[in-house]
Length: 414
Image (cartoon, rainbow, N blue to C red):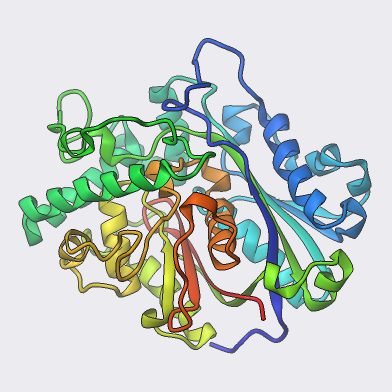
């Protein structure tokens, strides 16, 4: 892979609260913020940090299913609602299931590289607590092939990853995998408790391990996962500015307040086909390898990663796909404490999809905001140490069952 032709940065990141069950403010029968509120909050916060809308050249918005959850399309036209200064400026929306946020980022990066813009406002959002979970699960199934719904589970994606978990248990052993999945959940909640915007920030459960080991209930849910193995239904938005060197000067921010994008990759697989290997995320592996090749780094130089743990088994398999462990050894890697905050490679430092939340269209942008905060020392109580030996970070955002993947490698600006 060729290195980027010009320096490209991200800065001015912002996350709204990830709203849903678990937050004290959430009540399913009380009025809650709508998509306009989330778009406006995230967008205005980012604009404030970059000197206002007049500095923005283009906008891009990532979303998965607003047309179903909110009966709303034509999303680019919501950008001027954020600030009148965005009126008449170009904007697009992108969709790639749960990787929609990642696609918003890569779209902005390409605009910088194409020199059609020096400052791009990238925003992702989802508001999906507008219907009951069972109906929402059917909407989210649109991330997979609709023809496969005829033989799929009522809870489509929990069913798909339950099948992956079952195959993983059979091939590599259930006991170790289940212990690692429980530890994954515990780490996610503990990290989320350090981030005020996380959906699980208010979680005070003193027996996380016991909760994580809740017996599976095939008659009520799926065969190989319990509900705590799953990310929750979430509402929220995240925004970040993608800028060139000239863009940094334009917005008046120091390079040390930005992260440089040193590699990225976008890969897709045939949505009509079942996984080639039920115990491997092969498309994720390709995307991660390409992103690191473009950056010219190895995994040993990564100081933190944000992985797409829509389910605990997906998190473990992601570690294997990226290369931290061989296939089947991801469970042991987690149980050894390597993914903890002070471990070999701190993972999902604000809780990931299970702990922070999964407003699907926002997730990829949230990952970037988290890494920007970590690499620039703005993560507050969630801050980890980034060493000179491991100055890089990576986010991996997945859409569908390993079908749409975006991987990005970052380094603090210098």
